[in-house]
Length: 142
Image 1 (cartoon, rainbow, N blue to C red):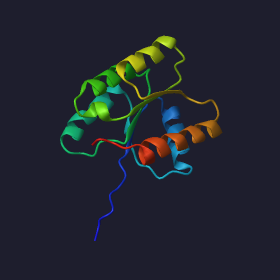
Image 2: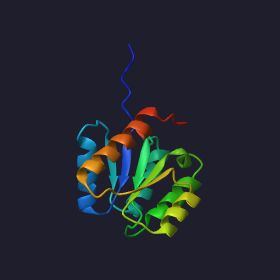
Image 3: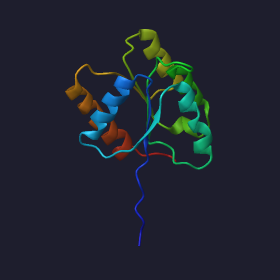
Image 4: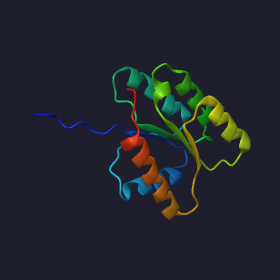
């Protein structure tokens, strides 16, 4: 008998409590994914030893840019420089409309850059697309 393999989690890196709540509510409307939460860049980087220790790698990382302690672009840089973690898809999900943030994120190897939608209904749609593509359809090398 095969044992059911649970889907890998999504790592959500978000420092704003309202945006964190909005994101979790948007994903919970129709989806069944699980989340790991990091409330700043330093907490996100603290997942590295856990993953190296055998904890399941996330299907995708949703990463804010403007955060205290370690900003999202530095987190992205460290993820994409790691020989194993660089294969984890990273979606920047941010309110930043700065062209330099967009360019820097792609220079560092981000897989997608999405500005946070204004309305909750738009955000639910974004959440559905993210989970469907990155958690269901995307083939992972790990």
